[in-house]
Amino acid sequence: MTSFSPGFRGRPHSLAQRLPPGQYPTESFPVLSAGPTPRVPAEAWSFTVTTERGETRSWTWEQMMALPQQDTVTDIHCVTRWSKFDTRWRGVSLDVFFDGLETTAGYVVADSYGGYTTSLPLADLLGGRAWIAHTYDGYALSPEHGGPARLLVPHLYFWKSAKWVRGLRLTPEDDPGFWESAGYHPYGDPWREQRHRGD
Amino acid sequence: MALAWLPARLVGRRAQTATARSLVFTVPGWPGHLPGQHVDVRLTADDGYQAVRSYSLAAPADDDRLELGVQAVSGGEVSPYLADQLPPGERVEMRGPLGNWFVWRPEQTEPVLSVAGGSGVVPLMAMIRAHRSAGSRSLFQLVYSVRGPEDVWYREELEDGGPFLDVRFLHTRRSPHGAARASGRITAADLREPTARLDPVSPVYVCGSTGFVETVGDLLVELFAGRGKEPATIRTEHFG
Image (cartoon, rainbow over all chains, first blue to last red; front, top):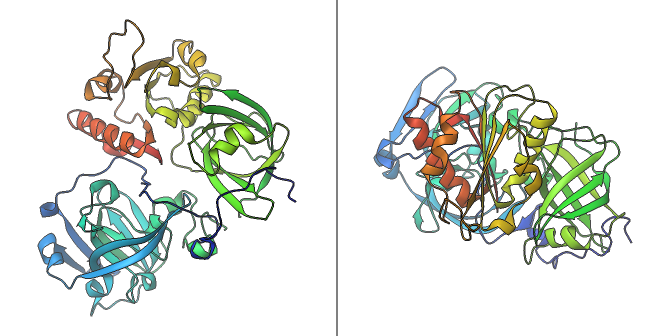
């Protein structure tokens, strides 16, 4: 017996092993954002990687779409506690954008149209674990879900998967982004339930 | 420092609509919060299973008393239990405050526009109450979209809010008898006058369902474009 919430039973707990702690499954695709949705036409979109020495590499939409494309099916976990299983994405692996790039930087700041930023270790974007995604469930990614293209880093809480991404900046130190500066966890591993700073 | 889970005892429950409740808890050790912030609520079943959801705080902290707004969602795991089943005097666990972005601080002096869809009014009510208790003489505006008159939360307080609170109700399905505005979803016309009263740096708070927030965000960005007001002054919060 517990001394809290008498009479509460909850849903059947069968999905427990697939759900990170404190998450619940959803069939819908909720949205988390802090401001209005930027409307960026694909023909105006570009993506730039900037090294810690200020060198840049840029891709237009057309150039990005000409890179090797990859399909991935993955579970995603939002810090607001919903998880969505088996989401289907198409995009370009970050390994492709970083191929041959010389850097000693350990961290990355992702910049988005509309001003959003998020920060994470460079290693988490490499090794086939992160993408620039432009297609969701067979359709062009809609603006409220980050279209025309968003970062996809499904092994971290979904605020790291920056919507409307326009570039990545390599930094020697961790330079906290928008939610990281507002009290969220610097890393954000759902399996260790790193929601807020200090978790 | 990680936020601790604190026992929270239900001491008051009041119906706001047929399915919406104001719940008052006492939470010893509560560290205080800003208007617009939310809390995590944790429920524990007899077999140890736990479920956590976030709820907005509807009022500034009154010592260790917290008021939440809970909309019972049909078939929901947590909200129907909180709304109608948790017995008065019993406890749940809470941690917070959470969210440092969707907040209004009493020291802000610019005129404000807030836009609520349905239960999205809850965090905005915390701001309105803080604005009133701070004696602020800046204008606080609320544009509040509801299906029908029976869906309005906090009606008395909103209708009798004094000279510095300006509330406009928008009815999407059923308007009160004799209403000047026909029932229907929010449009640019509903926001033109309220936005005209804002400063370039005035904050705008929008809270509601994702569809509502997306619609209002687009309307505001368009209205601001002609006036040199930055989209970055718009802060949004979604549910569902």
